[in-house]
View (tube, rainbow, N blue to C red):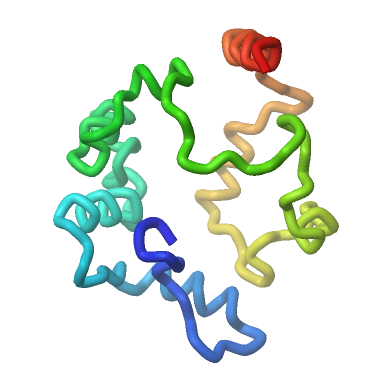
Length: 156
């Protein structure tokens, strides 16, 4: 999807093992590039989809600052975007921030308590990270973002 219109690890004529095949292709395959991609598009895709998490854009020492400075995003005024001065190219026809009318019923009724990857077991490192960073009964609310949201709703 990113810039090519469909996800880059698509598998044609796949049966019951579709999800496992896609996961394997993501882990082992190369990122397919379209001939019409610019150099900036190819570089941003490789940087965002790097298999080694420490090599990915926004995960490297430069963090999000490096990502925002990438030539692919040269036309974006990040401050205007943050301040909500930029009109989105598409506004979904929803009534409010909690309106889920455009989300397919299949996803609304999906049991999220089950493993998304089916029979793919988490690695020892994934289990350790989840255990290390999980905080029972913890929720974080960024008050600045809540105030921005309330201000936007008041002006609508």
